[in-house]
Amino acid sequence: MLEKIINLTKKLVECHSISPLDSGCQDILIKILKKIDFNIQLINIKDTKNFWAVHNNKFITNTLVFAGHTDVVPPGDIKKWKFNPFKAILDNEILYGRGVCDMKGSLAAMIFAAKKFIKKYHNYNGRIAFLITSDEEGKATNGTIKVINNLLKKKEKLNFCILGEPTSNKFVGDNIKNGRRGSLNIQLKIIGIQGHVAYHKLAINPIHIVIPLLNKLLLIEWSKKNDLFPETSMQITKISSEIKNNNIIPGNIIININFRFNNEIYYKNILKILNNIIKKYITNYKITWQLSGLPFLSTNQNCIIEKNLVEIVKKSIYSINNIYPTLINDGGTSDGRFIIKTKAQIVELGLINSTIHKVNECVKINDLYILYKIYYQIIKNIFLF
Image (cartoon, rainbow, N blue to C red):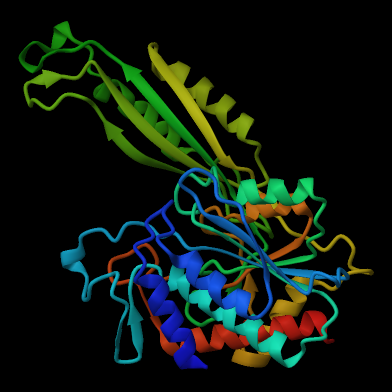
């Protein structure tokens, strides 16, 4: 089985699926799913490919969804890679390639876990489904959000969702998530007066006047951490101007800021606080913002009726890898922010995240096998016990 998981991961990595391109990944997955009698619905929108696949549609007691994405981030400087990032090279029991952890390896583990369960327990009572997109690493406008809206219109009932994001830290399964912080992007334009650097008194340097403001923003505690989420963080991601000459004071600069905010503060309060502070330091500015997602937390509100997915996942991880996972909702955003609209219980569980988005992204092949076994155990614990 490990060899099959490795081979499928390799095939997916060899597809140059830089977001939002899929580049043939989903065709590979769909071919496998069709052979085990999944009903496939393509929901392709513009340059994004999505599919919704369901097995055992005649039984609707419980639906377990495996959710993931086939798109990857760009490889960066290919010369810095040990191997070609799109060749999927196995070296000393480690598989290298863009997307092996985030998250083509997880997709391979999911597919074979579902395949094994269906072949062994073909009369199980419930449904297994796959929700796959090629628009997660990019703008995420035509991917999972559109599929979920489509499913909601059809009044599809989703009970459990395993999202294959790379959540593990040192060992597979040592950390899982059932929520994420929200993400707020700010673009702040500071307007000064362009001039010659030798005659700086005739100009207003927007770089100079913004420094006290930035110092103030860096000192603010936006909101504290709690039992569910880390504290709200602010990061300045870019400062730029259109001026390229060294002898010109720029007329304006653009500052990009990102907030990862928890449930202790609302994004509108962040905007209000930010505007009030800017007004104290800057007289001429323009601000625009874009909300990428609100904080979400998946809970089992019907614990008497439904099984508790977090507990099932914890139990499954312990039985396979002898680790009792921690529940830490840190990291970036995920498509869970869209799936939560279905009221399904969501747990994110995937491979080790130490090399994701980096040069030489890699995974130990034994980790792929462990994740496959955990996914398989989760399916069994949902439908058989």
